[in-house]
Structures are given as C-alpha cells and as structure tokens.
Length: 431
Image (tube, rainbow, N blue to C red):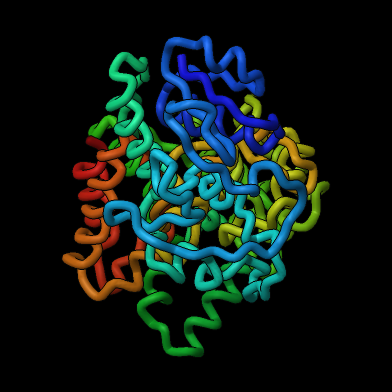
C-alpha cells in the first residue's frame, strides 16, 4: 500500500491519484491530510505539497489539482530523460516534474475547455493541441511518466507491491456504410447509377450492375471475412454500426431494411456490436437515445458502447449526453487524421467534468490509430514504421492499443490493398 500525504484533499487530486496509481500502476493507494498518520506509516509514502515533512519521497505540487474551474495556464515544455513533460518542480523534489498535475491537464482535455476555433465538423483541431505543437502526440506520455515514477519509488521502497498489467490490442470496425451498392433502395440506387453513368465512371456502373445481380459481391460486404480473420488471429474485436435515418452525412442502408438487420444480428453472434452514433445525434440527445434503442432491439441486448461519427467530441457536453443516454463506455477519444493519443494516455479512464468538478460514470477508451490517418502516408513502409514505433512504446508501458478501421476502406483497392494492410496489423500488433 502507498500512502500519499497532501495538505488538501480535492476531487481533482483524488481522481487523478486513484487513476494513475490504481489503474495504470496497479498500486493500492491511500490519501491523507493527517501529518501524524503519514509520519507513523512505515511503508511506501509520498508527500505531495509545497514542502516536504521530513526526508520522505517528495513531489512539489503545482496548484492545478487544488483549483476550481478553468484558467489559461502557462505551459513550458521540457524533457525528462527524453520524454516531454511540463510543470517543473524544482531541485528539492524527487522527480523533476509534477506529473500528477500534468496528467490531469491532459487526461481531462483541459485545453479543450479554453476558447478555440472548431473545424468544419465542430471538432477540436489537432493542430491546436499541446501534444501536436510540441511533438509528443504519438507518445502515451502519461503512462511513460508513471512508469518513471514507479522506477523511482522502487529504488526507495523495493517492497512496494504493484500489479503488472498486460499489453492489449482491440480492433474496432466502424460501419457507417455497410454496403456500397446493395440494399440501398430503388430511388437511391437509380440515382447513383445515373450519376456514375453521366460522369463517365463506368467501372462503378459495372460494379453496381454486378452487385444488383449478386449482392454478395458488394465491395463493402466483408463482414464474414473480417470475423474469420479476427477468429484466426485471436483478436478482440468490436463492430460499431451506424443505425440512423438518412441525412447529409449519414447515408447508410435504411434501418428498416431486413437484410441490414440480419447482417447486424449475424455479426453480433461472433463479436461485440455497438453504436456508431450518427452525425445528427451529436447535438440531439433524443436522436442519440432513439438510435441506441433501435439498435438494441435488433440484437436483443443492451448497447453499452458508443463512438461518434467523424470522431466528434465537444468537451464536456458530449460526455454529459452519453451519461444521460445511459452509455457506459466511449471509443471516440482520438483524432481522425493523426496517429496518437488525444488525452496523452493509452489507458482507459473515467471522464472528469471540470465544470462539475466530479468524475462521471463513463469510461473513455482512447484510440491511437484511425485508418484515415494512415491514408496520408506515401507507402506501406512508412505506415508500418509508424505503427511499429507505436507498438514498441505501448509494450514498454503494458498499455492498450486500439485501432479503428472501416469496412468501407477495407473494401477499397485505391493506392493500397487495405485489407492486406489490416491483415498484417492483426498479425503484428496483437502480441
């Protein structure tokens, strides 16, 4: 057991300590403000305050964990043995940075509460993030920091008990367009045919006709193959289906189509099926609840997991809506067009609402790779160099790798054979 003394217990302090030590390092932690309890404790202990009490393990605290609300903080980035960090502590501290406050800043998405200009899909721009600007987006810095803290603690307290976690890989298949040509209704199919014909896209015209004759030839209908692939590689997989009404950004097969419903049911027999929430549900709680209800009625089981179309998150409103809609876990925390860790961590965490100053009952699973981030690379060699580096870093901290691929991209043969790339990803990074 690790005892941590501080001069004031706050919701922020309690939240981050329980997460960093309990969830990442597997250390049982007790928090106290009583000096006498701290002094008489004979085991591992940390003072987290402005001044040490004796000659114990001491980390000089930043004020962030004792404040309320949002202020525009001055962040100065330095390096800790090659890893970027901030909130320097000074010479008396056993470690050079207040990684607890720095972790809280990143994991709560503190910077997204500050004024910023959103992109065309009302998202926080990746280039505005501290991690992108200072070149550590592709590092799970919170996990790296905490393993450095663990090493320092074990030097002073070699008997400190910590439960070692294991590296995990989860593959998410995002299904916002289940079929390219099949099951899309007479009017939509005819309109698409005429558009392709009069814009001289004769290859698509031929594909359409072939699929109309045999729907199993639809290039996006690769679900049986994917299920077999996951089973052969013993991969934990999740399929997120969009189940929404037609709109400008939501153009999947109709939710009333029985063959579409049968597809979802059949996938649910072999893998976790959850909701890929529509573009319109992002700003409409009732639509979100209705999509969840309808998908649950198809698979005849509760829908616990969700991710949003285009990875749209507005902090903290999105997570408040998810709690109100009775979701328990979210897989939207990441960037569509950049590899890396939006919240600075590869570990799932409970969302902390700074406006309410409280931990919320929803777990956030950060993803590191969205397949559209890979499309920017010029060749397969560069893709796998990036993924190899990511894999090595996550293994070093026994972290969790989450990738997102769409059945749509996997069904295309543009530039690369994306299914071949995905097959390699499963073989290389599931271990």
